[in-house]
Figure 1 (cartoon, rainbow, N blue to C red):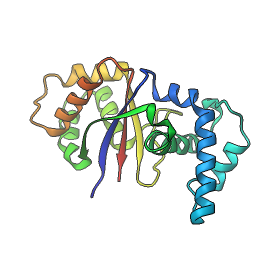
Figure 2 (cartoon, rainbow, N blue to C red):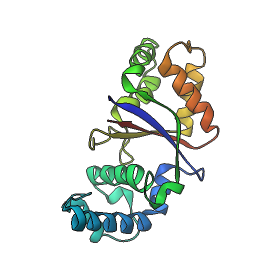
Figure 3 (cartoon, rainbow, N blue to C red):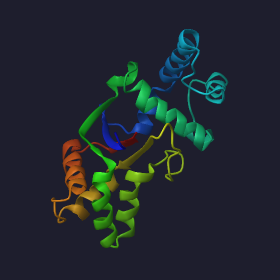
Length: 194
């Protein structure tokens, strides 16, 4: 099937980070219950023992700066692609825009690189490397998925820089459409999914 890039927006106009921290307690309890039910019914874990232990031994409020990067990335992955996709958190996130295979963006990476704008290239590369909430560096790959995001100032910068680029490129056209679709939302969230 190939890797696709899926785009999301929050429903309340807050960022992924704000939604995650606001609903962390609910998410934590939901994930622990889902994991237990999966173990009981299928003898299969949804989360590792390490993540389960972390959730059980830490409070109801998450302090992102205290969470190890890999654990935070796993939790964000579970939050977005389980809790908000088919769990009770689905009211927090909307899937938007087209689902286009990642290879269809290959030409857009070449186009962006030719512009020799390091800032734009860094933002665009989040589409293939993901981006961690922890340190803004590459997201830790989970089941061939990478989560990333652009904040409002990055979206505005990208929109300004690509407005005069030919929309004949499907990657550029897709990003232009998705950015236009989210309007003034504070963030565009994306998932490179297998």
